[in-house]
Length: 165
Length: 209
View 1: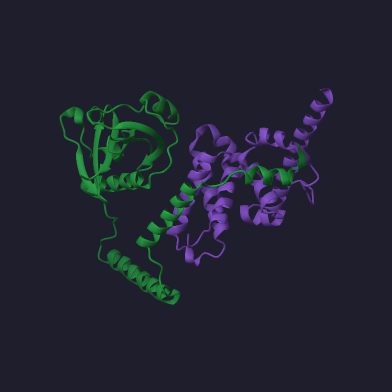
View 2: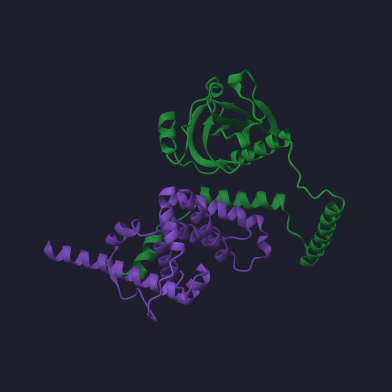
């Protein structure tokens, strides 16, 4: 492709999987986003991958909004304003079993998987994530904090199960 | 095997990769886009044209208001039908991935639990020699709809769209149960037939013969 090479497309596809939780929806969301991107004069867009990620995110949350069963979940994400007093949070010191991670991957919320992608794959700081998601840095830190607690719980459950057996 | 979360997430996601077929699909998407919207040679030229067009639009709007033509244009029923046919033809040609792939209508319709209606077999489509291959969600004029994709013996693809009948959006369409014939239009080289049947809006898009 002229604008998007194979690596970029694969990265966007993986972002889609992190966002939606499955390959089918990821392909669908990516397809729609690329179409919209191409319609919007891509030659004048500087950060093309970030631009496409924004389209994918907006489209996916629009789709979720259409699903009445998920409405409360999406609204909770959008209006989340809880800020707790933490200055830095890192997921790097958590060690987890790969199989456990795979097992719990789909049970994480869409926003949590997206956060993991931005933090662990793109290695974005909390400030960069807050700019990409257009939400306060404190909210990002609070989400990382909660995610860390959740992952620690998964890791510990696995340890205690291992000790019992 | 235990590893840091960061590495675990990377390993988990790196297992996923677009197939050659999917990559070719995106390349085709870009090729089509470039054919319809060729790149402008110069940014300055496009900016100049943009400002000229904007000026004419402002002047046009001002003149329209001044001369008493301020009301927005109301589409005639023919124009409304054409707009629906264009939307459906576009959806048919986009050939988005199926969300459910099955040749049994009950299996396919069972998938559509987000609809506020029950997709049905149409008396007009039953007469065709096409076989169902699957379906996916879509919309018609902003109303949620189902699209059922079919393939005939010669490998030609057609799409049957179904949505709940809403008078404010679809009253211009013929009702075959009142003895009316489907409305047939040709858009983008596709034959689009539209009708109302069993309280549903139905449309069949296929290659023009």
